[in-house]
Length: 287
Ligand code: ADP
Ligand code: MG
Image (cartoon, rainbow, N blue to C red; front, side, top):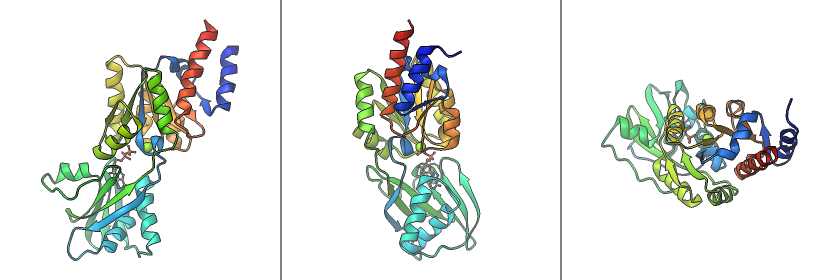
């Protein structure tokens, strides 16, 4: 049987944007010392818009470049993919046919277009595969991807996403509660730094692959932190499972919501604060 104080606070939580799926996660909320936040779709809205794009290779026009990228991205559900296909559509660009399209997990996408190997990938991927190729500067706040044609950097596409209006308040309140906040993202260091600084977070960890998100949670736990993870993506699920408290954003993937013990039904990061306050209040009534 569910103790009455918990049943009551669970109902109260529901009215405050919290779906408590796992009671242990709720009971653990009062012990949190560090909260790790995913960036895209969690602290930001998760809607990328193309802000600039250009060809860096003779014989390939700007529009051809975007068209090739959009053709591959038609097979992806990543927010970057949605931004790129949306821009090509807005500009009325005819997309070339692509075959053998496959994801490069946490790094991009690859496929064949007119007998050429085309990739849309992260700056980290380019740095790792083609050291010395220093293509273009990343501006703060930008998520940049490179388009490679036959393993040559053919151009870039820069996208921007918006920070959720509630994120700053959530981070500020957590700071008042002496809870450390960490930004954990697969995106580049420049955008990670600008988002974490804008929000006043304690630290950021960038360019992490999906399986590395889990390792980062474990590391913090080994350092003695009691860790909550907040995320929305399939790539966040292992980290959500590892954390002492797993918190999914309601608008995120089903996999994240299934894995997490708590779901923020209004997709509002500020509700993390309610979770901790309710967790503490419930505990006080129980003892
Ligand atoms: P996160 O959800 O933490 O932002 P991901 O692991 O989904 O990160 O992606 C990390 C990086 O890999 C992206 O910032 C981007 O550079 C690259 N990437 C992933 N998927 C795609 C895609 N479909 N198209 C282009 N780039 C991608
Ligand atoms: Mg995300």
